[in-house]
Amino acid sequence: MIVGFLSLAVFGLLNTPSVLQEGVTLPHVWTAAFSLAVAEAILIVFNRPHPPAATTTLLVSLGIFESPVELLSLAAGILLLTATCWVLNHSMGVPVPLWSPSRPEE
Image (cartoon, rainbow, N blue to C red; front, side, top):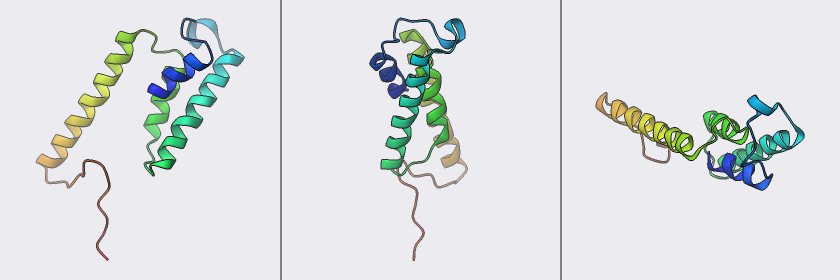
């Protein structure tokens, strides 16, 4: 999400209409490609594959979420869903680590 917002800033598209309103332009294509490349690079560096992260980044970089309220609502939804799933998994006895996946004993 942050990478998508930063890519909008880098390519000067913060105050422009989304691709839904303006249509796909070359700056929008570059913004989307840049944001996806950076997001995937971060996931590779931390060895944490997570395809939904790319989807969220793409939606933000294409201007679908425009206002700060929409971005905060998206972030709050992500945090709420993560916390709910974590609590449900633990209440059902499914071992879920906070950060790293558990490693099988050798």
